[in-house]
Length: 128
Image (cartoon, rainbow, N blue to C red; front, side):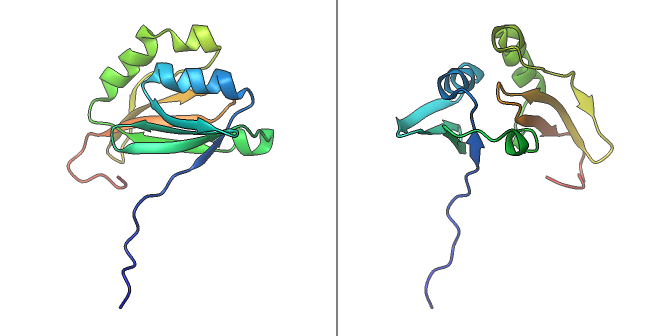
């Protein structure tokens, strides 16, 4: 029987201003592994996505990504210390603990894509 293992799943994230978004994500801590022809492969640790030089307001304003991290407070501090909200005119919210076992904060990118950056904080979270 042929192998059917899934290797990786990456989202295509739209960018209203490709260069600005690329710089934003680099400042957030992602490494640019390759860039070319309107597409950038961005990676931090074992997580990655494809930034595309394509923008549709309906898509960008309805796209939400979740980044699971080991220390949500350190990630929030990274965002604040890097002055991302002021430098890129983006919104970052306070850290909140939810009853489903996740502590997280939200961050919007320059195109309006919503990121939920969170950490599992309960022994039996509803969703991981």
